[in-house]
Image (cartoon, rainbow, N blue to C red; front, side, top):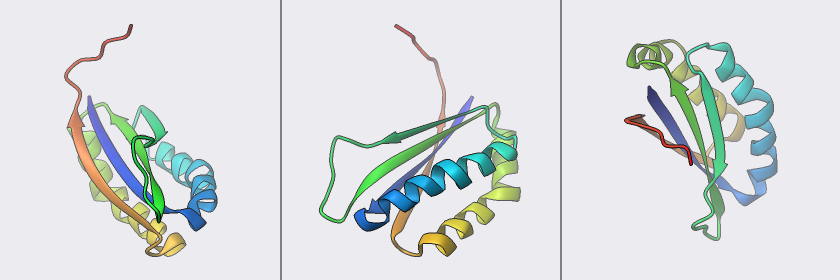
Length: 105
């Protein structure tokens, strides 16, 4: 399993609109790609700054091939959609993680 993680720094004045956009536009569109089996949406609470807060979306892909297909066919579209909608008010960076194991307690 591969986890594709995106972290977003969201300026406070855009936070409410961005949250609605993620829930009503981004996540449904990501689901339509059929490249991910699960999405976790969370807010970073360990630190904040004067200008905004940080959120994380973690997308779970069955394989590296599914993620590479997402990159080839969808990634640019979603990046451009974010920029077209919010300009520079939202900054993001991406990370790939390989799931080694999971422990439920």
